[in-house]
Length: 375
View (cartoon, rainbow, N blue to C red):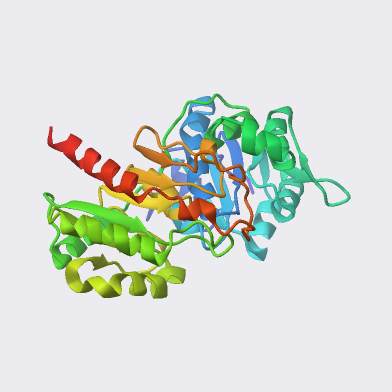
């Protein structure tokens, strides 16, 4: 073969980049160099995947001519669709691992402290590895000096629960050895999704003048104690409805369907019980409609942050210091509760952190925010 394979992102070696254009005889139409080739490994927790997108703008600033690829789980990959800063998203499976193992990267950045992600970080051919890998005994290890603080947070409960005041985005920037610039999450709707949002609003009778409070009612099954009780939701919803001012939407995923139906049952058509089984992109469409989202520390909270909503988030078992609301919200934390945060899946203290959720503050902060928009 006489010609060299071009170093161009558009060239696949399978078909022309443009119809009726022959790269071999006509030359490259718009050569876009791969530049620095970066692979981000972030398989775990959909909320973490969204939070990691906050690193993309700085990565592009540090490596302006670059190609960013990302491998994640099937359940999370649609969160990265339509992201203008990512060139390619791979779903973590045998096929993708085979393809990635045949490629060479300048940088591999593994966010996850897990064996499967660490194994992939070690397998992929890379000039430099950042974040976390595994050693010959299968133990998770930090791969660079910048990852050491992040690593210690997983090993030292006192550091994580009592001492650390840094957000996840802050210490992940250090892990990636890039400046911390406090960038927003990156989540973009397609034009068709924007049209769908407007169609759905029209169908349920929502106008731009409506003041809408969204309740993200659920959480991951991995940590079931990140959600308020059904009764707490119903008490707070009734209070909002009595003002004759607000519209209320219930939000959630497939695991929340039955629970949302129970919460909604006493209110009939006085509230909007949005669909929960239409997939994560449609779920984001529904969550884009309320101006305020009331939520526990869950994927729904991270999605609300990504959508730049005003977030009223309550915390119990998880670390509130690691979450950045970007001055668009309020954190409700269990003041004086010795056991929080704890990251326990089963509570030995009768879920005090849930019992002491301040519903009055949730209501008052919501009213205060909407009042501020009228000024």
